[in-house]
Image 1: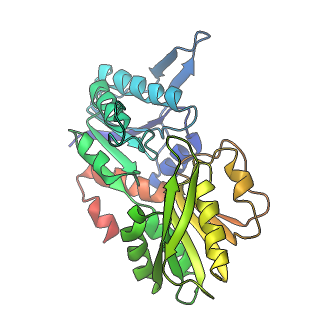
Image 2: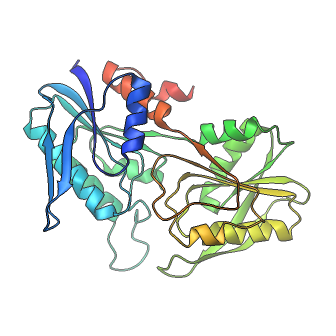
Length: 314
């Protein structure tokens, strides 16, 4: 076993790191992370971390490349400071959409980021709801992937919606929709969407399932421009859905999303604090923010003590 835990964070999401430490009833470690005037990142740990079990909380959020570089340098600095073990806690894993070669002469950037993290010196990774499951296999070090969808399911269960329809935003989310529907005692529907090349624009073409007169819950792992979800909302309303709620884990949410989703067609938007909102807020649609700090904190404690992370979901 390693010596006591030490938790540090960069500039990506300090509020989440502080919430995790409050749950763990321990202080957040003291660390300098800033940019010089030439945009080079500087890191210095102000606490002694020799042989300690170091956890670096850093979602890779906007500005993505700066936050990624902060994470790399924090890992390297911890390694050179003789940390006993270094765990990169990455609630949001950027470049997750680039997980395969689906066109000629394109990179697999999700694998490249995994190589960066390993080369920097991380001993293990803790993350939350990756965009694609195969990204786990890009790492040659232990990786634990948590999921916040049970939190989302519990949020809706408390609303006592009568047999809701859980709508998968695309075919790839059908299994997840079925699992959540099982928790809520509802049915599922699947939206078939089409994406235009390498643009952020996608359109819902058709839907499998009956939604007329039903409460519908659209689920996805992340929302960027909101185009796919907005198109699905219109499709559900045209099929006679009595209410439409949208839930996702990662509020990537470009500025455009706060326009296309902030409409009367949406009854509620639910997301977690895995990353901060950097481009705006919703003004008209009721929103619910679910905290993943207790989930991540419990997983970190189990990693430190040698417990089972998988037991969190049993």
